[in-house]
Image (cartoon, rainbow, N blue to C red):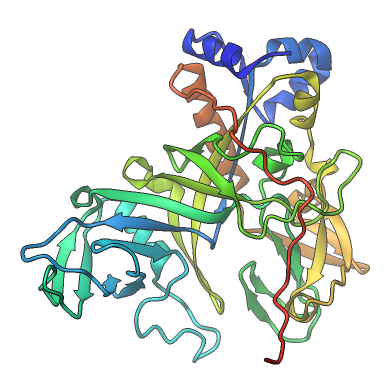
Length: 394
């Protein structure tokens, strides 16, 4: 048994043994579980891919004369201004003003909130346009100005739902192409797509939320961040395998961090044809090896993680609950699978290469004594279902 305090003391003295979630698998095979648990202090996990439920709070400071922004746009992307005078919230999926969306299907969705966030982190200039009804203490009624992230007092990424613990595999059983948040799906089961880092993914390495919880320190796009809450749609009451890993979508995380300290490579706006805008985010989470059981869970392999294949042409949208089949991530990463007796091409919206890079960057920070672990102040709910929206008459 180890404690957070003991592990942090080793990190501060630069004596901690840190492995990424890919390396630890072979390490435990060679050393044995009990011996490895005594030696290994931290396992780093990571993921990189589109996470639509993302956004940021920005504070502009006051103009002269002062103004309370009641309607605002950044680079023609609508922001939410129903908070204090010069605070705004920018959502990653918000479209640019006058974007035709899917009027001419499938729409291209060239620019939106995710792209503005990418520009901000990259230090590029953006334009703010704001309107107000005017008050005695905030007399200004209109403002237009250019700014960069350095001109802001705060730029805080606040993501209500990131790092899905497993997810669907999307396929199209219809005779027409469809466009989804999991990408373009060809008709007649010709391709399928998924979005997960598999054996590197944080919550797949801590399936019962023993170390990842509210208050956990994380690596968020290059900045130090934290888990501030269970993510929206956190649904831990789910089917699980013998290894306790969910076999469907389950837990999620609410994440936050300082955008001023982020790295542009890991904050990227995404245009999904026929669907909309998203934001690709890089997340790394360290798992303290407090005991052999926690270490054992971090040795999960792609072949041990299965996900459901869902028809996004009908069953997903209609919420039928039908699952065509299940596949594991080792099969998916081979690039071709068999579904209903047919050979199907596989594509991923998540980058395993980027996830591995993030896991190694976090590993290096911990090894150098620059990143300490934090004990969660609250555990994520372990047996929580998810409500649906029922359409009722008044």
